[in-house]
Amino acid sequence: MRLMIVGSLNGQISTAGKIAIGRGARVTHAEDIEQAMGALRSGKGADLLMVDVKQNIGLLIEQLKAERFAVPVVACGIGTDAATAVRAIKAGAKEYIPLPPNADLIAAVLQAVAEEGNTMIAGDPSMKAVLQVADRIAPSDASVLITGESGTGKEVMSKYIHQKSRRSGGPFISLNCAAIPENLLESELFGHEKGAFTGAIARRIGKFEEANGGTLLLDEISEMHPALQAKLLRAIQERIIDRIGGTAPVKIDIRLIATSNRDMEQAVREGKFREDLYFRLNVVNLELPSLRERPSDIIALATLFINKYSEQNGIPPKTFSAAASEKLKSHHWQGNVRELENTMHRAVLVSQEEQIEPSAIMLAGQKAADIAQAAAVAAKAAEKAAERPVESTAGKVAANEQPAALVGRTVADVEKELILNTLDHCLGNRTHAANILGISIRTLRNKLKEYGDAGISVPGIGG
Image 1 (tube, rainbow, N blue to C red):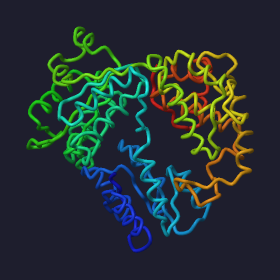
Image 2: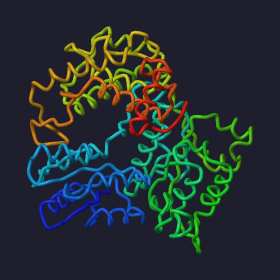
Image 3: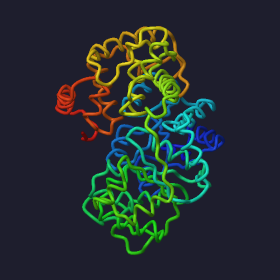
Image 4: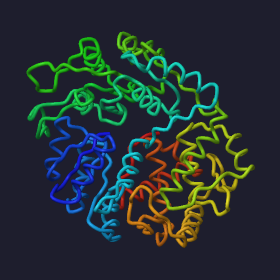
């Protein structure tokens, strides 16, 4: 875990850093936002930013998004002022930690970030077989190509391999090749020098250098332009890269993992992917089964997501009724684990029984899944949950405070969050998101146009 503390060390925040070091984190420090951004550009990466609430957290998060740094932010402030916590979370912070810091609270936050999207469940024989191969090849430095349908957990498997490797003490750096515009992807990979092109206001270290000594994951590599594939091949073969605008090659030491949801051999036959690069990447191939091919993992995964979203929304976790379990096991799960996660998120919000009932599990294609009605039920359920004091385990606010709860929010607001979160999970794919939400693609597009006209950021275009 790489932790960067942003703000003055002349107070309790330094104590938080010492606690984090004691829990195994590697801690760096930046005096302010400008220094923090400079450190990130220079390759001093971070898995988490712990920011003094006196800093402009909203501005920091805007800059992180603008420069495509996917780093979660935790705010820290003196005392347990709920209003301060609300402002920090509304600005984009994931958590709020009151100072002076509590050692267990710091540990919980670090653990939550480390484990986010990183739990491997493999009880089904089809998944166990893949995991056995992963365990055997993990200690090597061999390149790995992980294939499978969208939503099967390719990034989770990549992190698992990294954690089992001899490079586990180094960074794990991930780049989604499909999410970065073609004209920016080369800079993201290899970095650039100041003035190398319009907008290059400072030197930027690329993902290859940031991953030095660790693992670099190139997600959806089949979406990479053929011209860039040639440069990637050279980097893999010669273990050197050239920054854009640079004057000398830079040596790299990484383990490369790539993923794709396409038939790579067909892409090679069609000339869309270089054959020599394919063979370089495909030293070991792990093909992940779809969720419908690993049925005995469905309930275990669903339980994991129920617990996750119950905690996030301040709702006591529930089990499944027998009928709900059967409904989950009989569904086709075209969207795989990602669809299951979205379905469980909805179920947590709309369930009104002591156990998750079948009606709370709204599956793709169900005409009865009216999104506005679901949001109304969610708000009503949240009111009931809010009557019970809930102690934060990850430190969003002081104990017994719930500034991010659903209570007091409008149906339209809850509906908007549900739609945008689902679209984000689907990587911007409108068709897939509409199926998961149980609404028509036309309804979804009308909603997104409404949000866009209101100046609300909508996840990337797809489908």
